[in-house]
Length: 358
Ligand SMILES: *Cc1c(COP(=O)(O)O)cnc(C)c1O
Image 1 (cartoon, rainbow, N blue to C red):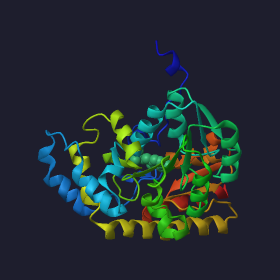
Image 2: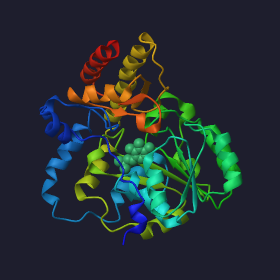
Image 3: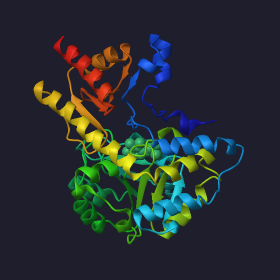
């Protein structure tokens, strides 16, 4: 029983606040969590108000067609509802695609989002990774030609490193790939990347003409709804129709549905979060420059700083109630910091300064 599962690993999520409260006796309100790329400002206050008002509906299932949410997304992206599938986070859409295709081989960047590998191993796929940690499309193409994987994952921009391909390179690449291989473009941080640099913007509308491209997006990052678990996939009608066969009914909750619909309406709030993100990210860049630390230029809401003894640094910060991500498990000494609110970043930087001076 469970022979195939016994060989698999469980996804290690960023440490939850509750764990730090239990282990270090720190009050929840004093904990600074900058480990899971959540939006530090949360959703628009209008979203919270709407959810509050509708809390009495929680005994009802949601509208399983997700009509209004799809309408909102259709407007945002100038596409049709038939091109959209809703998932409990975009993770679930990735799961539908991988479980639906049951690939023998999948191809991804040397270091990229862990769920690609986890879902692929669940269906017994061989995992192919480029030698480069970040996305190098020449390496992708070389391996593709030799191995003909059924799925190629492009994380644009990439988590956990933060780098981002240019959209023109991405489209040139798509043109060279046969239609038997599905290219998944994970756009979890596209709102950040396209704000910072228009050359990085991938419009989901532009991938619809391809038979073999699936774009995924999420409400967990720029829209501040990580805890509500809402994401989406966008593709041509053939792909979407088939993915729907794997979707369980009512796969997001009624309050998640209400929150995500409302969040699409407050564009100013989302823009504020993104603007502050890059303003605050500059503090980390300045810090790195002042201390001769290398960092990866980021098009997301997090930044990777190379730092000696990253595991020790992460543990010392944890004792102070500051949660960040140690990158040591990826084979190099660095930390990934989610950009927080100004006061959170200031406290983290003050502590980091003390730690690296030791
Ligand atoms: C956060 C993230 C997701 C998905 O998050 P959901 O909360 O499941 O929507 C997908 N891909 C990447 C690269 C991410 O960082």
